[in-house]
Amino acid sequence: MNAILKLVNFYIYSSLHIGLATVALIFQTAQLFDIQVSLYYYLFGFAATVFIYCTHRIIGFQRMPSWIKEGRFTIIKQYASHIKVYAALGLIACIVLFFFLPLNVMLYLVLPSIFSITYVLPVFKNKYRLRDYNYIKIFLIAVVWAYITALIPMLFGADQLSLTTRSLIVAERILFVFAITIPFDIRDHEIDKETNVNTLVHALGIEGAKRLSIVTVFLILLINFSLRTQGILSDTAYFTLFSFYILLMFVIIYASKQKSDYYYSGLLDGTMILCPLMIYFFA
Image (cartoon, rainbow, N blue to C red; front, side, top):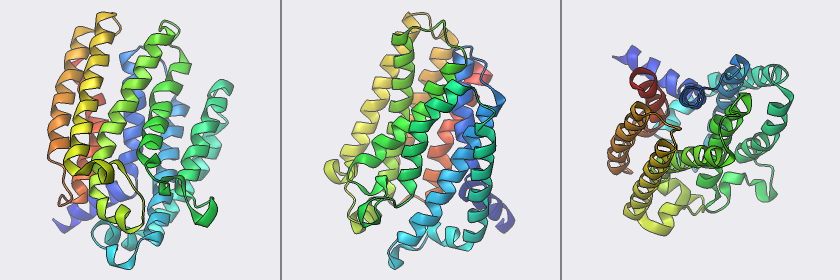
């Protein structure tokens, strides 16, 4: 059992899990809308995610008050030297793979790269990161994830899709990431309060934040219904997505500050892998 737990910890906290989530969401976009995304972009997305999330874990751990260094932070501390190596390998892979991408993709990657780097590195006044500014964290995460996993993949050949349809696809992805990120603010409620970072949970309360997350899922269902009526989503794809989002609502409802980080970094982040798998097998 101890060996299994170590394997799970390695998988999650080495950022392999979240890196695969990026690959899965890119694949979901490609599969749903018949796009041939370059293998180099899949690899770049994986490497970039590992680099950003490993860097975030290391810097975030160093900035935590000493009394908070428990739970997942104990694991991060234990594997800190390993995580630094994964971050370095991710960065090297990013740099190499970047030059194998089409020029238009390179140009589109500049903006999310700047946002991602400044999200984790303390480059602003008073050693602030973008995530340290009130309320910006959740919106920035949602937009960057949608940019990387929905908008850029459509550059590889979605000429059959109108601008309106593309906008709906990107909006659906923004709302999805927004919905699953709100529970992370519930998990981090005490930490954010201690570090003076206001989030939607501080403004709305835990139950209010959950309600906002559920409302967001309903907006996603409306977007998917619109895509179905336009003939963009097949009936099987639509009902597969519908089933997934109903399941997601229950995962959101049961989120709480008392839940283990495995619930968040494992299960909630895992929904980004589960949805593409469901589409692959059932749509």
